[in-house]
Length: 636
Image (spheres, rainbow, N blue to C red):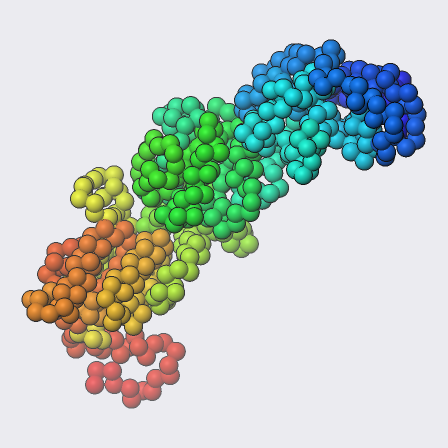
C-alpha cells in the first residue's frame, strides 16, 4: 500500500482549510483540532516511510516479510513520539459544541484528542487511506487503540490504555465504540457513533433509536409558567419527583428545565417499559448529555416501577443519568428502592378552574392567559384532563368546527373530550352514550332539584373542594356520590343518563355479574379495577341495584358473614377516596348500610308518579312520530 505524502497530506490540508472557511458558526474549533490530528498523522506517516525499506510495495499490509520481522524484533518495547504531547491542544471554547461535550461527559484533554483521532475518517475519507497505511493493513481504515495512543503520544503499555476501559468517559458515555473484541486490546478498532458525529456537526435531532420513545420538547408556547423552585432544584443536576395530582406535572417540568437553557428530552414511561432493546438506556443518557436541558420522565405509574424488572430499569436509568437534571412525575409516591439516590419530592396540585379555562383557551388557538367564553368554560368545567388530553381534545374540536366553517361550540368540546376516554373502563362496565335530556324526564320538582344540584356539585367540585378547601384532610377524594332511591320504573337510570348528558360525559353501568365473585377477595379486586379506571375517565359510574353490593353489615356468625362485612368495609373506604362521579340506585334504601348514607353527597327520592305525571309519561313515550287516532284517550 503506497501513500504519496506530498499529494495525500496536502490534499487533506486543503480540504480541512476549505472546511474551516465554510464551517457553520461554532464549529471552527472542531476543524482546528482536526488540523492538529492531521499534523500528527503527517508526522507518523513520514516516520513510517523513513524506516520502511520498500514503502511502495503494492502488497503492503497483506504479508509479513523477513525484513519486517527483523524490524519488529529490533524495535523498542516502548514507543515515544515527539509529534505531540497528550492533550496539548487548546481548550475548546465554552460555548462550542466540543466545549459543551467535554463538560457534559467529563472528558479530559487527552480524551478529546483520542475522540478526534477516531472521528477523523468520518469527516474526511482521506484519513481512511492514511490510517490503513499506519495500521499496515489496507483493510483496516479506522484508528485502532494502539494507533490512537501513538498519535497522541501515549505509550501502549502505560496508563493511556485505561482511557478505553468500560468505565472511562469515552466508552461509558457512548462516545466511542470499540469493535473486534476478539483481537488484542491495542489492535481493536475505534468507531465514533453516527449520532455523536452528527451532533458535533450541528444536528440536534434525537437518535433514531429513540423514535417513539423520546423527543425534544418543542419550542412552541408553553401552558405553564416556569416554577422558580423547581428550576433551582433541577439546575443542580439532581433527581426531582413531581407528585402529580392532576396530570399537569409534565408541562410544568418542561417549562422549568427549558427556562434558562435548551429544551429537555421528554421520555414516555409507557413506551420505555414496553420496548426496551439492549442499550436503550445508555442511548437515552448519551442523548440527554449531548443536547443538554435534562430529562423529563413520566407518567411514572405507566412504567409500573413496583414490578421488579421495571424497578431495575428505573434504577439503571437514574444511575446512567447521574449528574443530569432528571424530573420524574406521576401519581405514585416514590419508593427509595427505585434508585440509589433519593429525589426531592414536590407535590403538584391540580390547576384551579380559572387556570384550566386558560389552558383550554390557549389550546384552542388563543394567547397565553386568554379567556374562554362563558358557554365553553361551563362546558369544560367538570372535566379532568391532563395537558396532553386538553391539547388533543381542543385540536379535534377545532377541526370539527373548521370543517363546518363556524366557531367552536360547547358540544364540539364535549364530543372531543369523550373521545379521550380510554377503553379500560368499557371492558369492565357497559358504556352508554347519553341520548336523553331534561325534557325527557317526568319528575316531581324536589327530585328534579336534587338532580340539578348533583350536576352543579360535579361541575364545580374542584373550585369548592380544591380552591375553597371545603373538605380538607382525611385523605378524602374530590368525588361526588349520589343515591337514587325508589321503586322500579320511576326513572332512576334515565335520570343518571340525563345527568351524564348535562355534564357532557358518558354513562358506565357496572354489571354486577362481572364484579361479584364467589372466591374470597376477588370481588374487591374487581371493584378496585373499576374505581381505578373510572377515576381516569370523564364519565359517570352507575351502580344499578346497589344494595347487592352496598348492603348492611351483619353480626358475624361464620366466615361468610365476616367476608361480607369485609367487602362492605372496603367499599366504604374506597368510595370515600374516589375522585370520580358515581350514582347508586336502589329499590330499597333501607337495605343500604347507614355508613354509606353518611358519605353520600346527594340523595334523590323517586316516588311513584301521580295521575298527571303518568299522563305526561304516556305522551312522552308515544312521542311525536307515532300516528295517533282521534279516539286516543290519554286521560284513560
